[in-house]
Length: 232
Image (cartoon, rainbow, N blue to C red; front, side):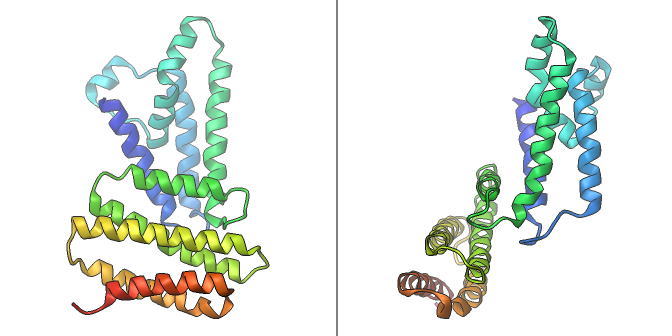
């Protein structure tokens, strides 16, 4: 149980760091270097179980080393006991590493891109791994802000209307989920009004670029968030 909690904390920490990247941005070189180093240490950690004296001393594994070791640890030991070659384990680690490194590109993705589902999956995982209600609400509202930026990006390109429709819908769903949770966790929180003001500024400039159905959807959303910012 303790190991599972530690792996959850490591995953959450990395997803948090990735989620803080600006839309369309890339990770800092220092982060990529640290990730590469930890992936290498993860391969070694998966190949060699922790020594008893290290476990007794409570020395932590590297962040991703611990994660990869946790993914492969138990099965890796059973495979070695059956004589499976170490090469197959390292190949699996390499596959996981490649997937994690490629996920950087998802933070440039917008609806319609092949990597966009991976971006949304990482975002959803980050929300679900957060146990604190106020923090989870904040992540939901961050998702709503991301959807607003994506709508603006889509409107500036030649895309099909359904992508805009779906993104507007996702924006509203994330907003309502986040506001509902935040109102339970922190009644009358000033964060609600700030979010409403920020979203109004983000969505209002889009109205002239929307078709009739999208305009009705966006205006309904604006009406909802304007109610949140109204004086009590």
